[in-house]
Amino acid sequence: MVQIERILDEAIKRDASDIHLICGIKPMLRIIRALVEVSGTDVLTEDDMTEIYDYFIRGNVERDRVYDEKRRIDMSYEYGDIRLRVNVSSENDIPLFTLRLIKNTLPPYEALGIPNVVRNLIDQPQGLILVTGKTNSGKTTTLNALINQINEHSNKKILTLENPVEYRHKSKQSIIVQKEIGNGKDVMSFSDGVKNSLREDCDIVVIRRD
Image 1 (tube, rainbow, N blue to C red):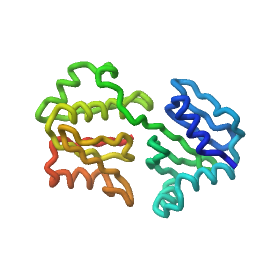
Image 2: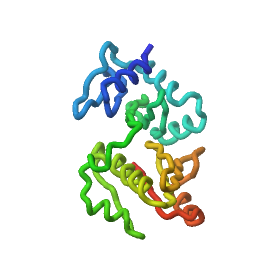
Image 3: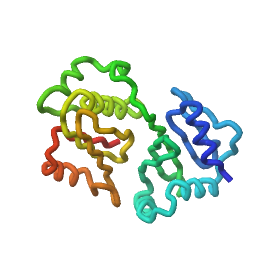
């Protein structure tokens, strides 16, 4: 029997950014840039992958249907006080899992090395900002740091449309509403969320889609 929570505990303890659970190899952690085996674990079997699937899906009929239809699903999951972004995909008709650990606190805006010109952009009364880059390049962290900067220093209403929601913000100087996209979630699609935002008296709309 695979000890999923022990794997999660070790990932948290070792400050891993991601966990990889793939049939035929041992559970792996990404620590900085290296892939490292979880200590004291066995090679994952097909039965283990089924057990892991049941652990995260937890009998959710809608999630099970989405995975059956698309052979992939993204979801958020809470373990203790840690949030995870869970991606389930498929290899040889066997589910595999990539888990991203979401830190509870954002790094200071100044620590991200974002140019001052970007900070000036978020003070503009209107416009469009695109945050792009490859996987693990810090897009989500940067975007949420910008949201937090506005939240701490400006009086705005901010609506985020996300799939899934990762960082949970608390309203400070601004009002923040965070909506998750998908069947059975807050909004069915990004298109629906954007259309309805026109009726929600928003100053800023944030669309985050991986």
